[in-house]
Image (cartoon, rainbow, N blue to C red):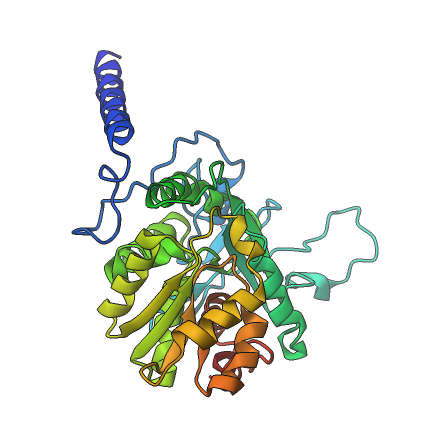
Length: 377
């Protein structure tokens, strides 16, 4: 008991010290992703002590978070029935990663002794509406765009029937983004909540994760992106699509090396975007940050504003492609329409992120109405 109390006191003293530093100089005391970024600088620890009933039913993890077990031949499903654990392993077509797709079907529809009208062929059937692929989607609680864009892309392309999303919102209780300091605080909030949000989405038994918030995936450049992916995959066992890596893959498909970028960010966000693209071998010839005042403010940017920025401030002979960052900024229609005007690809972050997830999971049908990227590759 004595050593435990002493350890708790040490931890509390550290927390208080960090709090004093943040209060004294919030920007300087937090990693900004651009100043000597190193793995481990970001704090993804959570203060949640919530226990998830049945967490161990996923085969791995612990009492406080679910994580898939891909290796055991059998597992106990959430209905309490033990059944086959038929993991499917594939190689991602865009980055060559090993992707393990969990079995989320085999023991479902196992009959109760008193059930009526049941037939043997019902056992092990997939999710009725999401029978082809069930994605877990992580979004900020302030985001009203990602789900709309994703469902628009799926519902507008009938060949993608049977693909769906289960979304969980990362609690954002201070959405103001009117300065670099605000943006770093926003990211700190995000990190405190991201892992418990992953736990929440896991209760729907998704087969692959999609990160519907892009700034953190650009933070710290390529190394920061890979660290973020490892953090989430280590929590739940699933592979995931991030906006930053999706943009890398998209630009590679077009052979684009000189890019212009539109974002809703403040300067610190734009600097991280430039850092990321520079590290993957691209030159950012121009970047326009709209400096939206809050996370919710982003969804209120009109399409005309984005169109004006692209035509009058970003496009030029020194640009191979235009990239849009910020998932609460919808640009599917604008990109699809303006590509024919400027004669070069425009990559909207939401289209790229979903495209990456689909292609990684072996879903190769073209998507229309949401940019050349989704139609051609």
